[in-house]
Length: 150
Length: 235
Image 1 (cartoon, chains in turn red, green):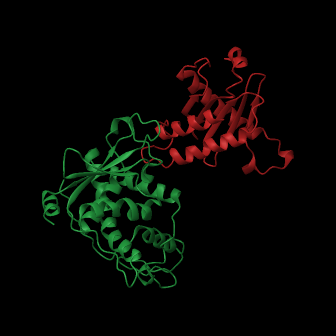
Image 2 (cartoon, chains in turn brown, purple; image 1 turned 120 degrees about the horizontal axis):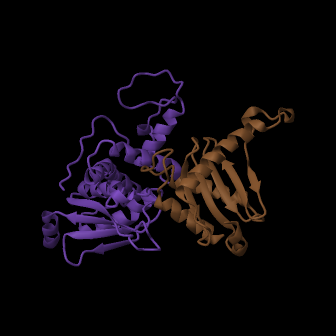
Image 3 (cartoon, each protein chain N blue to C red; image 1 turned 90 degrees about the vertical axis):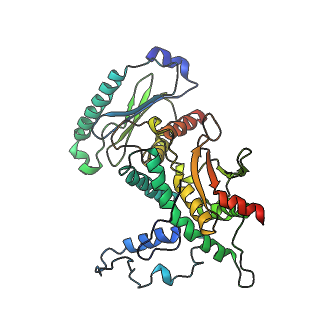
């Protein structure tokens, strides 16, 4: 995956993963066709691992900082020379992971917009069952048109 | 599909906006000592929606999100009790029907002035105009996108909506691709048509297949009864 990323700076949002509150993968989408494909199994493992690591990092926050336990968050950003992973956790424990190019600006705006699309097209869809994999055409349509317009 | 008016036990509010507002205004005062009313709940100021002026909510608008959640629950509720797609559409249609019956007098009242009462549409074309413009504007704050008549069947007319508000956030799963939740709106249209005495059956159909611009395009097919078409020819 890393080798290819250097050539792809025209498309700066690489992919999106949504993890439910139990650590299960409910949605993943690559926005760049040139990315190496990861098998579904590996993605599930990745989601589960991240969920665990996130829980550990949350309890790693030093108590000397005086942050109340409710406000402690886990990993928010993970950066490498090739990509940056931004994690946004909702109040209900759903996690949005966005893989972007390391210098991508306004990732917060993008991830909030993705959350908004999720709240609209997934949560308001009567055919979506909570915590289950997301198969909502309207959500994917909205997502694609938003990311393409970036 | 012969639809009869579902019986309406007990008092019911007059229009959908007031229904929802009344529900939310009563819900906001839960600490009110519960006077065990059988049907209508009375808010703290003792004024029910029947005491309000009918024009009061004329320009009021509802939050789209709250409507979307409510409608989503309606679909889920209906879905738990049906055996198939047609059954589900019939239930949504029946949920809309009484709204249509009540919206007709309300909208006529609102568009009338004391000296110039608005006439009730009694023929097919004025009815379709009434549905596509005042009714659509009241419900969705815009007109319907087009009115068409079938070239093959004189009984059939179509109202096209490129992006029905009720379907905005809904993605129908592939195995139910025949379903269109705008059957609820079809029920409203049917209620209006029956209320003016033009018997018909209305159904909602997906027409957005392969349409990149309007993937949610919906056609409301209005099939008038034989008697209505005959009467139309006489006058």
